[in-house]
View (cartoon, rainbow, N blue to C red):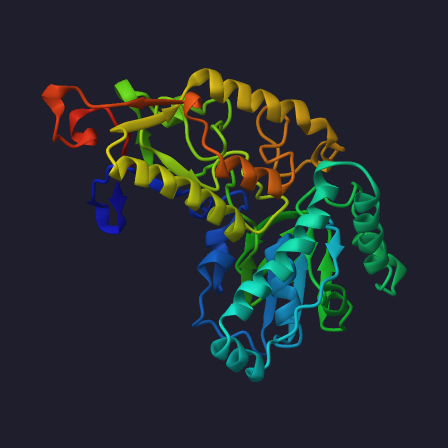
Length: 388
């Protein structure tokens, strides 16, 4: 495995938390290097840049762009939001926790466990709206539309109205965005961006929107996963080749042909309908059980079988038509085949699946006697990762 500075380490059961490593998307904007002021991606925030009393432009209206505008409104002299696609916004309070709450949780740690489940239960309850038609889906859609009606100006409300069903794209959660966007010092621009020039942003209608600072809330390459790392499996098989037609995995954590290789937030994880931390916890617990089996010397290498992986992905594909993600919008959930690359069932089903390990779905191997005591990666029968 290659670390910063190209320092390499080796490990017997690599576990990659791949999705958070996705590279930021910003290369599609012409003239980024021509702008005379600071310009940075939200994932690489430049805290040395002063924003007070300056003209700040934010490009992007996904979750990150909404959060930035909600928090920054009132700080710069002007704040301009460039919108390519309107988003549905689900209202949800996000109050600051008082000091008393912090002191109480330190005194009674079990409150953390209680609070965790207090958030998890309602989120799982409403996550059904994403994967199955019914009253939950209608309720979430009604809440989003009611929230949009809090925008008083008809023209602004029209500009903020999406042309697709709520939740088809990743649902934006915010209790303050519509208040922020209605401020006198905040402007919404819906004309497509043509290019950047030294003074600011030029839209395709020829208008120059002058700015002192530009923030790119343009998202990430969600389909990169652990790449640009090079992952090599059994017999020299390369991950880029295996995923040429789109990412696939078995039960969201492993792949045939890549022994002893596990992923957090791998292909078809419930990233569209549940918090990533909770998903990663279920996957980490599953992986830890494999590590303990390996420590007990029950195997030297493990990987899912091809038939099990194909059956698993066929089940996912068959369930996709019921999901909200197939109702007619273009989103980063969709893969090359036009189908969503997310989990089409409830988070509870994903957690239950990972809690039960069916050994018949795996190829467990013991090293041949002549390789006893030799590291599996060195011997060539485990997966490896390297720098590009």
